[in-house]
Amino acid sequence: MKRSLLSMKDVDSKEIAALLSLSKSMKKNPSRYSSSLKGKTLLMIFEKPSLRTRLSFDVGMKQLGGETIVVESSQTPFGGKESVSDTAKVCSRYVDAIMARLFSHEKLVELHVQGSIPIINGLTDDEHPVQILSDLLTIFEKKGKLKGLALCYLGDGNNNVTHSLLMGCAIMGINIRVGCPKGLMPKKEVVDWANKTSKGTVIVTNDPKEAIKDADIVYTDSWMSYHIDASKKEERIKALMPYQVNESIVKLAKKDFIFMNCLPAQRGYEQSAGIIDGLHSVVFDQAENRLHTQKAILYTLLKK
Image (cartoon, rainbow, N blue to C red):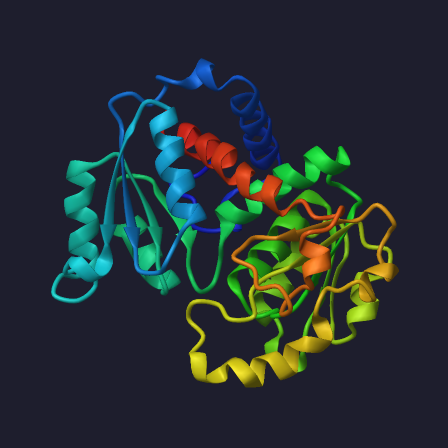
């Protein structure tokens, strides 16, 4: 793995396989790693709200014997009175790594370029690699493999989770089909990269039935990402309701499909209550695996 984890592009299939193997080991035998990062400190910078990312990194670092410092960017000069460059250089003198959850992906890249310590993307408007790495662990646990599976994503195609899913599936040979409205399609450069990289197939369609047919995994995400203005809610509900994961459309998926949502979720919007609370749902296993995979990421980056 490179010095930092900014994007799914920073890891190849062998590195992902190694991370997943380490995640499973840490999940099974946590005490074996309980002092592995003793003396290390992780700084966590938040511009966006967070529950799972904040808790899983905080708990994970402490379970590895390290320390954490949480900083809300609104309480600092970060990116305002002080340049991102200066922040990166100063923090590199104090801590061993930074996990940043930001709006701008460009700010995250600048932290990496100007700093001298590992930078971990805890989410930007463009990507969410730590989520997708843990999702791959969940899929492997439930299906016993990755390569050759079919993953259907329904909903807002132009968001961080969709972009990182396209990349992660392409790298690991999962056939991915994204079903989304015309005005909310993934960025062309991401789709092009996935097509170029893919060991499987990549399809982006406006037809939700085409996307979900015979899917092993059905995935969705919030219709109102943190950077979306609340005034657009009704407009987005109208555009996205045909892509809701509900009891009717999942009849087209395989009988043993699993349902995933990276959370937070709103029942009655991106999915029905019956789906997220039903027998096919693995959303809480998915949430737990954020902890184990992020411990593996921290260990890999900080033990170098």
